[in-house]
Image (cartoon, rainbow, N blue to C red; front, side):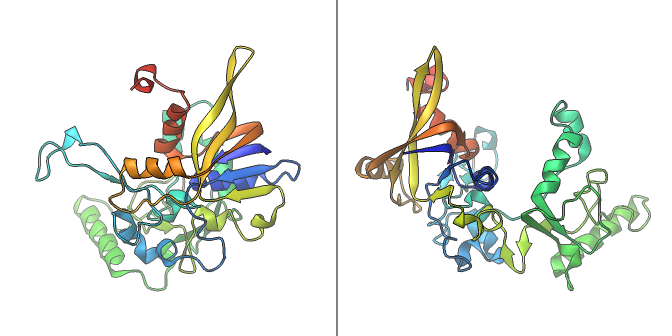
Length: 323
């Protein structure tokens, strides 16, 4: 079995790429995600990854997160030797679900100031280079004066808390307190209030949060990109519960090329307390499958699992691969 494009990881990046690449009906696209496709029967989403108010519960290992989180934990942090918990380990939430960590995060929408891109990244990554992509991605719905640098027709819905009929008390108190501090430091009232901190040319100041929430529903990439209509595309296959184990690397005229993906089908039990040994036992028992890419394999496993997959495929630092 083969596809033009194989995307590994159906999270924040993978879901977006699957939608964009499958726009060409001549290209076949396979999206592999280790976790479940909890939004498969739209619009009946699981409450844990739908209700914005549950975001706090998704930031620590609890029964509510056990089905949708890898429960990664850092090694002992030597920078935290001082304090009440010296050398403590840090919980690292990572989405185990179609939509990835966009199903677990706090839904805040922050693009950054234009100067950051111009000064830190430069050529090909200046604000003028990336601005069209930001505009294409977002659907900014706000009552504030529209900014020409914001997108209004993209798939990712963005709302401004300042437009709520009644702002949460904690938000209002914080904004009031910031004004008091501003005035005490010699600024005119309201000069530090920023109605749109995602305005690339006016990112400083204090303002209400902007969130990926629409009508009380979290707008993960599974919701905003992998819509019910998109899932009907004949050239797009979404394979959930597909745990990729390695890439098949071949030598093509002296150049090593990854052209095959190996994965195991089934659901790994990743509840709190699960050890690497438990996962390895499941991997040894689950049936292995393979699929070939006619054009490209795209890694979208995130900052932790994309490098891990490369190492499992024999690509990486030699000294670490020998361990």
